[in-house]
Length: 187
Figure 1: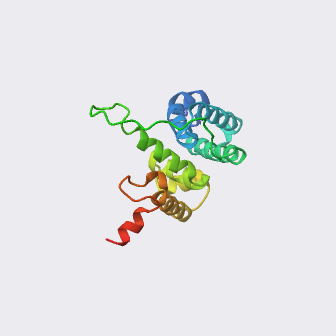
Figure 2 (figure 1 turned 135 degrees about the vertical axis):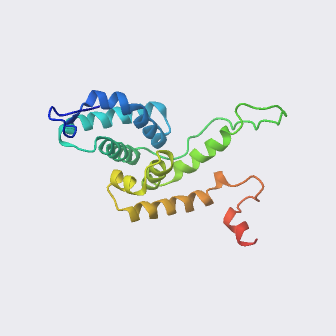
Figure 3 (figure 1 turned 90 degrees about the horizontal axis):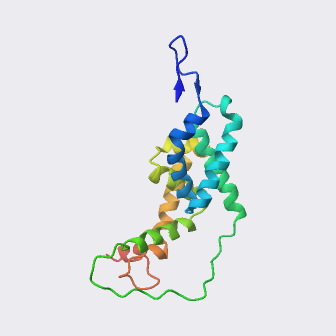
């Protein structure tokens, strides 16, 4: 990706096309984790790369810069999008247990996690995605989001607190309306 200078010094330039070829799959994954929609993720990545292209010669940390654009563009789109419930004509019927290995087993749990993630405020969701899905350090996450490491820590803590009490992640054996923390307090 980076071309060596003729004098053997540090890389002088990272070619945009080479960067896109090498890093677009990882960046698309980040975009998908933010949007949870393949088409929107592709649009988000394309818009972010287009924005980065204009400043490409002026930036040093290319991947961090593009990730920052991904997060801020997603936040802009998120503010414009209505996040209410989507009505359906009929409720789905629950599946009866068949006793055989179901290849879709666990899909409900992943859906529940995404439902809970979608309820998080945009900044908390971005922190969780960057820290735990993209495996960035606190310092790297802070650099991408343009905030302090302390803000990353506090947003992570708040996000986990919200996820702990989210009704879609409550174990099936808890009585309705009871959270895990309420049952742990009585132990």
